[in-house]
Length: 144
Image 1 (cartoon, rainbow, N blue to C red):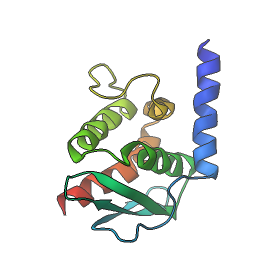
Image 2 (image 1 turned 90 degrees about the horizontal axis):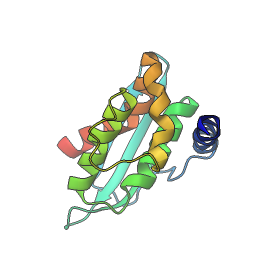
Image 3 (image 1 turned 120 degrees about the vertical axis):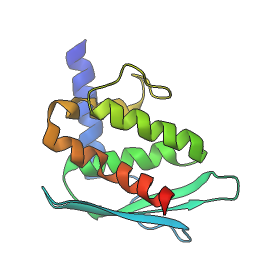
Image 4 (image 1 turned 45 degrees about the horizontal axis):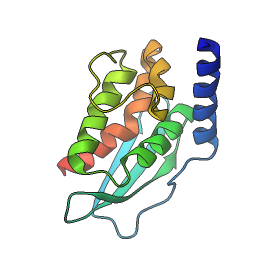
């Protein structure tokens, strides 16, 4: 059964890496940030529109990078669109814990979540930066 789950997760990463969802720039947008991983050359620009009720109405990204960074950004935009900022911040915390190898105290993510496809990245410390680049850009955009 584990091989089946690993195959599914592998396919999710490859699919989102080849055909990222929400690729482009939000128009209009009121939040943006750039992400860059100097170790492998991945870079992206994240834009999103946060409405008056603190809900992410739209979120998109542009850029280039490895399959993991593109898949992570794509999965992130799918997961965060329509969420209140408070929930999005919990998802950010859970995801960074998940890919860092600490998935015991997750508050909003569970094993059925598509973001679990990136859990295995935790076994490759150099790839954690690829998986979290878009997420750190999101977190930075919230602070600016």
